[in-house]
Amino acid sequence: MSTSPFRRILVPIDFTEDTDASVHSGFEVEVDGGTVAVAPASARALELAAGIIDDEGSLCLVHATPTYESARVYTGGAGMGVLGASDIAEIHASARAASLKVLEALAERFAKGIACTNVVRPGVALQVILEEAQTFDAQLVVIAASGRSRVARFFLGSTADRVIRQSPCPVMVVPPVHDEG
Image 1 (tube, rainbow, N blue to C red):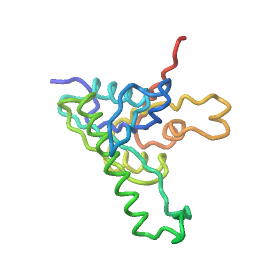
Image 2 (image 1 turned 90 degrees about the vertical axis):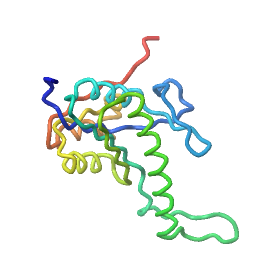
Image 3 (image 1 turned 180 degrees about the horizontal axis):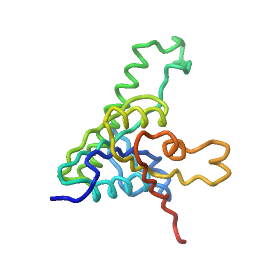
Image 4 (image 1 turned 135 degrees about the vertical axis):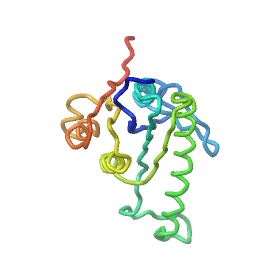
């Protein structure tokens, strides 16, 4: 019998460019001939959440993909034109399928034997995280810090900072991984 008070933990997962070995966790998944890597602090956040969740608990891994509805996307060549709603829906479906594959692999690696729900949808990360925390009825959000400098956070803001202020439940922030080199 577990003594953990947390039965429902939401873990936002951030992907990173696999070409920048200094900022990814070493965990990557082959998707449609390419590689998707996971930010190191995101992998650590999932590992931490899996370690503190109640034995009967459930994790919700959430990833926000970019949204293309507000962008005017053009195709090249002689048939140049604006991508239509069906094209954008296809892009979202492809992004969702690839992201789900990564989340499933992450859960298998870092949360084996724990009930996991994987949520992927287009939108602004902050809004997706906060909405899913409500929908999932999360008791805790375990989120990775961005690793940006204080100046960058001042000008650009930080999703983790905003989640802390607006979350409907407690938030645990996992600091970024920095090389001691």
